[in-house]
Length: 323
Image (cartoon, rainbow, N blue to C red; front, top):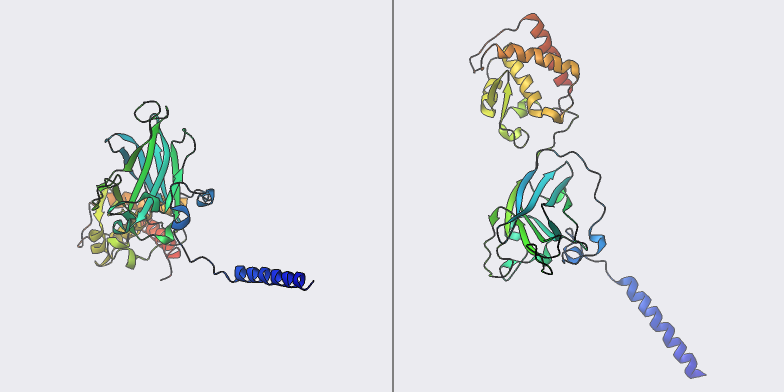
């Protein structure tokens, strides 16, 4: 009887210790890119959550060829961004299908390697396709984790719809990369011929306010990414030429140029009321009759144009961001 009681007591003690140990197990350490869970080519479904609803991109996509190791173009890789997410899309052409895809975005010097060669198994983003029909796939990555400009290593294994490479039956897939600069690692492994290309985030302009002229015309760095000049009244002005106008003596022509340059630089990223668009057209038609303005230009607008200038100026002032 005593032995049974002793055995029971020991059993209860051990169970209690096991429960206690389970409760005290520390939580996993932070893994922002989920590399430990999602880096392997054969990844669980949890690595591929439902993407967010599509949002309009902030600028045109950067598109490069997707090329095999044999130099054949088998598709393309497109990179774009909206205010919150980077979108990297693989698309194959012809009979080519996606077998799996791997992606790294960031500093080229920090791309995962093993013995000097690219290590795909440690790429933060990957996906396998358990069919022979997939022709396009998009990775959606939070923008907050990325810098302004970075390198894109986009790899894909592709095969033909016949199940092999190059139209042959039974063969495997071939590796392809988004075209760009060849990665010059120190290794001589299978992945040492990787390629990468650069991407800089497109600036997303808010629809709620306009950047003040003192900021916008202080140099090209204040303009939306990819905008280096603006056309007003049929004439093209660079950032420095517009800045020269900003610091020249006040007159109607100068005011008109700066107001319209603001609207042109923001383009379709801000909603312009129809009445303001009509006033802007009146002002632009007048500027077109003056020739290209210089720092010494000094013109007084007729009454109808003065009214249009005043309307555009009042609207822009009401939309100016607080600084």
